[in-house]
Amino acid sequence: MDGLHSTITLNNGVKMPRFGLGVWKTDNHTSRDSVATAIQNGYLGIDTARQYGNEQGTGAGIKLGLEQSGLKRSDLFVTTKLYNGEQGNYDQVSRAFENQLKDLGLDYVDLYLMHWPVDKTYLESYHAMERLYHEGKIRAIGVSNFDNDRMRKLLDEAEIIPAVNQMEFNPTNQEHGILEFDRSHKIEMTAWSPLGGGASLTDPVIEALAKKYGRSTAQIILRWEWQRNIITVVKSTHGKRIIQNSQIFDFSLSAEDVQQIDKLDQGKRALWYDDFQWHNSKGAFANSIDQWSDTKKY
Ligand code: A2P
Image (cartoon, rainbow, N blue to C red):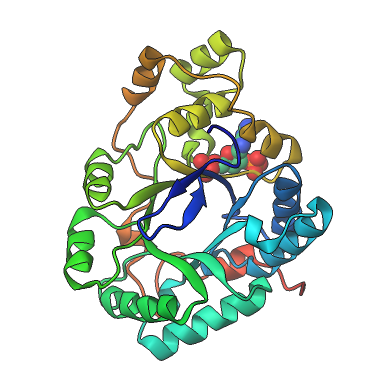
C-alpha cells in the first residue's frame, strides 16, 4: 500500500514506516514545531539523534503532535542514535540511552542506531545495544554509515543482525555496493539527506521531470526513492514543504524516468568517516551538539 502509513517489515518482524521526518541541523525549538506539524499531517516516522542536540525539542514535538492528532505513542515510529562520544561498554551506552529516553520524554524507542562506526569502539558498543534491545526498551537496533567491510566485521561478531543501515542516499550518491550487500543480509537501507542536502533539487534532469509530472523537484526525488524501495527520512523546517514532501503517493514515475535518475549517480558522498573517527568529543563535528541545540528546556 502506498502512503504515509505504508510500512516495511524489518528482519525482526517490527514494522517501520517507509517515509518519515528527519531533524538534522534543526534546533530544539524548530524541531518541536516541525515534528508536531509532521505528525498532524500524517507522518508516523520521526528520526533524530543525540548528535543533533534536539532530542528535547523532538520529544516535545512528539507530545504536541500526539495531543493535536489524537494518535497514540504506539502509532509512531521513533528513531534515535547513539552518539560517537558516548560509545563504549554497556554501562556507558546504557547511561547514554537512558538520558536520551529522558530527553525525548519516552519510555521506549522504536529504533536505536549506532550513528557512526567509531573503529575503536563500535563492536563493544553494538554488543551493549544488543543487551539494551533484550531489556525491552528498544524495538529494533541497527547502524548508520557502515560500509561493507565494517558491516562484515560486525556481522561476524553480532548476535543480532542490524535491522537498518542508515546511509546518505540521493540521486548523486546511490551506494549500489552497500545496498546490495545489506539487502542480501536483510538489512534495510534508510536514506539520510535524500535530497542531497538540497543540491539535487536543482539538477536539470530532475527539473525536467518536475515539469513533465507537474510536481516539485523534491517530490520527484522522494518518489524515485520510494520506487527504489529505500526508507526515507526527509528534513524540512517549513510546514508547507513538510506537507508537500509527503504528497508523493498519487503519481508514479515511469520505469524509464526512474532509470534517468539512477544514471545521475556519481558516488559522491557529502560526509564520510574521516569527519567522524573521533571519540569522547574530539575532532570535526564534535561541537555539533552545541551548534544545533539551544539552551531552552522543553
Ligand atoms: P528547509 O528545512 O529550509 O525546508 P536533505 O534531507 O537531503 O538533507 O535536504 C534537506 C534540505 O532540503 C534542507 O535544507 C531543506 O530545507 C530542504 N528542503 C526540504 N524539502 C524541501 C522542499 N520541498 N523544497 C525545497 N527545499 C526543501
